[in-house]
Image 1 (cartoon, helix red, strand yellow):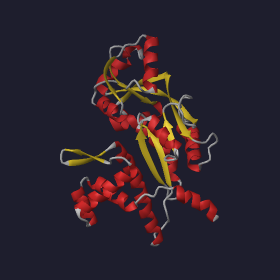
Image 2 (tube, rainbow, N blue to C red; image 1 turned 120 degrees about the vertical axis):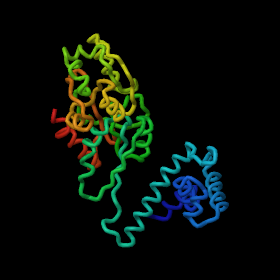
Image 3 (cartoon, helix red, strand yellow; image 1 turned 30 degrees about the horizontal axis):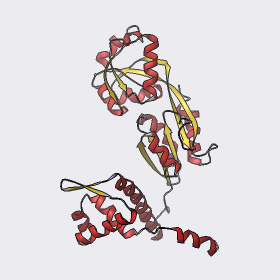
Image 4 (tube, rainbow, N blue to C red; image 1 turned 45 degrees about the horizontal axis):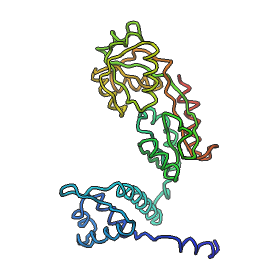
Length: 313
């Protein structure tokens, strides 16, 4: 690259002191300046001074006091996430330069919308674990808006979601339908006979565990119950699908989950299938910045989902 192309970039940069960032990262990881002092072999005032210098440089507080403990502020959490990646890559670089086998691991970063069933997430991401290239998959749970924001700045390679992103979202990203599946109703053995009699109308009055109202699945279930005049007794609502299934295993109520993981759910949670609701669909999307997918792993995930995961049912 010609010098004329580099100098304007360098002049425009606000240089970050990586020593300051390192001290911050160790304090955040260890939970206190005292423990970081032991780890780094430096005096506590020195570390505190370096962190204050970093805060002045970025214009934000990184820690707040909670009793005797230090907790990360919102900005501190963001900085810690980036610091973690910076120093992880640094360790990988050192390993490679010292003759480590395999070189730098390729990092594939994917965001999973937090309401995604984890069994489905594993099925969908399985191809990324089978590339044979030493790829490291980094999966993050989060709310859709946060994950899309990270996707827009290339902090993620892909977002997997239970619903397509709306046209009103101000992120130029594209939906790739992975597939759809009906949902099955599950129940612990003690509820099975009652729930199966004249299914699905038998669900009226049955104790039921539902996902929260912010999910596409909940909206479809509410619509189905309304159209069929089915009124289950709603015992509890959950954001975390794994917690919901645990309550279902304990016999607290019936619940629904994607039919494509029926066998896994029956085995893992010791529940039985009451029946299927073909009118209620779960759809899953790969959201990327490319209209035409270019990333080979993203393409492998899409192909696997369409030809294998959702082709089973």
